[in-house]
Every structure is written in C-alpha cells, then in structure tokens.
Length: 377
DNA sequence: AAATCGGGGCC
DNA sequence: GGCCCAGATTT
Image (cartoon, rainbow, N blue to C red; front, side, top):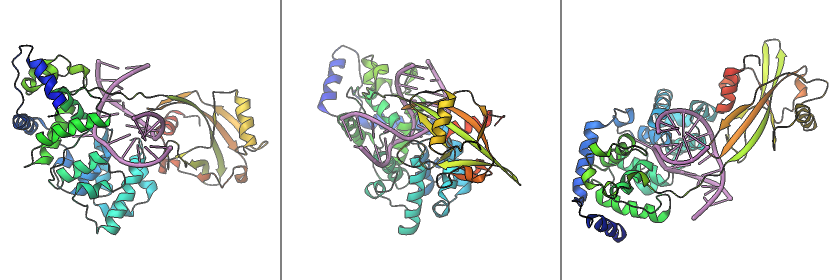
C-alpha cells in the first residue's frame, strides 16, 4: 500500500472506530467468495476460448453488459471462430456492430482478426505484452484476456475496479490521472489472486458493477464494509475522484434523402463517411453542415452550389422535423430534406452511391432513428 | 495530458 | 442535465 494511503488510513483509525486493516488476502478471499455466490451467468464465462473472451472484452469497452450482450450473441453466431470474422466484409462487421457506438472498435476488431488469422495461425498470443500490440487492445483488454483466457497474474483496472479500490483504500487521487492509476495498480498487485487471476479480476469488476455502484451503494449490507476505508471516513459517494471535463460541440446537419425511380423501384443515394469525424466507415445521406440551422432556401442554394442538387431537376417534396442526437462530445441537430430527382446523372457518383436497400449498409443511430419514424420519406 | 470516439441507463 | 459504462487512440 502506498505510504500516502496508509497515512490516511491511520488517521481514520485514530478517530476511535474499530477498523480491520484489511489483510489483502482476506479482502481477496471475501471478494472471490462473493463472486462465486453472486456472479451473473454470462456466455463468455462459460468458455476459455481466447477469441470469445477477446470479443467480449472489445464489445464491453465503455459499454454495459446489458447493452453488449445481444451483440455478443450475434457475433458468435455469425462468426463462431476468429477466421470467419477475418474473412468477413468490413461492411458486414460494421452492420453487426451498428448501434453499439465507438465504431473504431469494430474496425480494429476486424483488423486484429485478420492479423491473428494470417500471422498468428489463428492463435491469440498469451502474454500481456503481445496482446497489447494488437489493434484495439489497450492495457485493460490485454490484462483481461491474458488473465481470463491464459491465467496470467495481471490485474485489470477498469471503471468498476477503480471505484471499488479507490473506496476500499480511500484513494483520493484522481483515478483518471497517471498517479492515481499507479496507486491503484500497486494495491491491485497485492490483492490479485495469483492462483486464479481471471476469477479475481472478474470478481472485482462484478462487485463494482452489481454492488459497489456509483450511487447509493448498499454499504450497510456489504461483505467488505469492515475493510472499507471510504466507509469509515464517510466519503464513499465522493469516490472515485475524476478530473476530466467534457466539452460539448453543437452541430447542424442538413441531410438530403434523394430518391430516384428506376424500373425496379426507388433508389437512394448514400455516402460512405471518411476522414477523422464521427461514424467513420458508416453510411449516411448527402448532407451539408451549417454553423446553425439556416433558412431552407439558403441551405438548398448551398446544396446546388456544391452540386449535391441539380437545379431544375431536384424537387424537394418534404422537410422533416428537427432531430436531436446526443453524443458524449457532440449535440447534433439534424433535419432531412426529401428530394426526388429525374436523372441518375443529377447526383455526383464520385461521392455517392446509389442503392436500393440501404438497410444493408451500416448506418449511424441518427439515420436509423430517422428511417424508423419517417414514413413519408 | 487532453481531446475524441456512441449510445444508453440511471438519478 | 450530469455521470457512468469490462477504454483505446490520436493529438
């Protein structure tokens, strides 16, 4: 235990409360026993297949188990082994990922599957260092896979673990800064059960997810209350300390849902998103971004200048209500102009593709939401 | 070290 | 509306 923490602990103990100083072995034993009794029955806990464990860890990055579970099932059903994932089309991988967010995870997932298949003979490396070199695998995921799939004694430090450990040992340093992480790691290295590190790592995460929750944790009934320095100091809800501030950006998207009728039905124009922006690799409609919502006529004029719409051919048949789409760092206001064109050549084919079934393409949630509601389009 | 990458659940 | 979630990558 770092000296700083030990000092705080002694201060609390000096208040006169009886405190069990938390023999690390005892905390470990209580945690793993609690886990055996209370763990959820999750599919990736019934396998030692590194592919399935890796897949679950990528899906669960910044994602609740409840949200990621159905995605895991669909991926395993579609790609039972890493080789099948490697052979898939990236569009199909992104389509399966659609709605889960942080799409770089899906792109890196596919890249790593190809590397494992082609360069590693389909076998995942078993060490933290080698796993860390894979795309989309950072410190957390490398620790999780090496400990859970291969039994390596490497502690995981995710949001749950940071909360549990910062409370148990009253770590008041910001857990999102390097010094705070260092303190937590040095504690975890003493806590981890070297006989079954995968079980311990999942135990402390599960304890954070189900019991030691961000708000209103049931400390009165907690099996670790006797060891918890935050409880002794009455600072449970103040921990963990985080310093990051998120600043939000407002954006205004004017989408053009351009329809073109051919013999076999209506076709639509889609655009594959490129560059450093959100939703890289996904598809949406031709659009113009403006600093704020402008008059419709002005937006249409800009669209003509940019040759998205050809004067005399394009007819705007409807304009949607405003859609509000909230992301972590952006608040997007979007509206959709429904447009009919008479000639195929009215739309720039270098930028846009003409498709009949846009549902087959990976679409941002905003576009999906629009399509579900907009009957008149 | 800070910014950015989604979407959803909870209070 | 703010915080958080089995974080990683880029700047």
